[in-house]
Amino acid sequence: MKMLDGAWTAIVTPLTPKLGVDWDGLKKNVEFQITEGIAGVVPVGTTGESPTLDWDEHNDVVNSVAVQCKDRCKVLAGAGSNSTSEAVESVRHAVEYGADAVLLVDCYYNGPSSQELRDEYYAVVAREFPNTTIVPYIIPGRSGTALAAEDLALLFAKYPNINTVKEATGDLDRMARTRSMVGENFSIVSGDDDLTFKMMSDANIRANGVISVVSNVAPGAVCKMVNLASKGDTQGAAEICEALSPLFGIVTVKVNNERVLPSGERALVNDRYRNPLAIKVLMNGLGMPSGMCRKPLGKMSMAGVDVVRSAAMRVWKNNPEVLQPIADFYGIDIEARLADNSIWEKLALKG
Image (cartoon, rainbow, N blue to C red; front, side):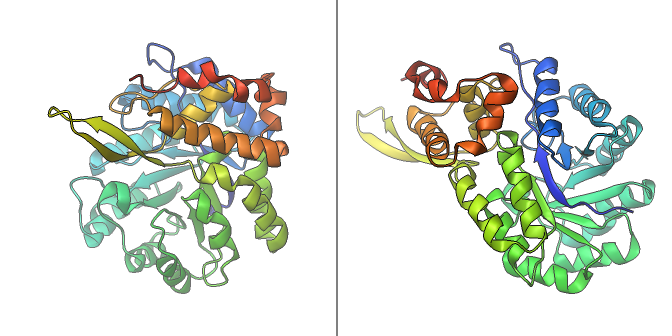
């Protein structure tokens, strides 16, 4: 059973102005990823707005991506749920459509223990689909629970198709502990763009790649960073990591926004605009198919949009080669769009 490695893109689900799926835009974005040499595409993860797509849309997005990517790059389909039976059905659809592997997030909200995640969720799916690579996705900041490294090692020992983990805990000690228990025939994949280089270059972790948000706009650069790191060229990988760092900083955007209270008093509230809002703002601003997010995600304040725009401007000024492939593939004048205030003002919350 093949484990995952290299750079994979957690692809956005572009939406139309009426918030339906933009199928032509999705195809164009996937084609861009393939052209830029991505190892694989991950449809309907968090970045693909899995919480707001209904199951028919979810399955249709997986099908569209799997058909387009067949024999060209790999597909890791988002299939997790907080219901094991739903996850089984989602995996079944993904396998039927030709996905190479499936991504299962820890069960959110109902928050099973690690033992329950192991026995009543991951093990159930692994037994049902023994010929499909099952990738646990550990992200306690969103799920409110976490499969323990020890239980992951136990799953790997029993089910050879659980041979990869997407690590989005930010806990480097946990990752090192995982590596010590699972050995080399297991893949640790970064779920945090800003930690990928550190995870791959750390001798105690030896991560194998990334499932990236930033590669929606910079697939070639992310691929190159990961490939150099995997070959042990830490200096070369570090240089690309530095070039990408402004974009890594906007996966989540935090800004203080003013509120005027009923009393007339003014107060600052720290708003945390989470993925996929920022990457969609960036793609919209640059002119790529994206559309807005479905509710409850809405629009950033102008201060938030300015954070995104400033990051793109820094990259364009200092390392234009990172974004140049967008200009070439989509026929976009990036410099003109970055300079056009009206484009970015339309992306911000009014008032």
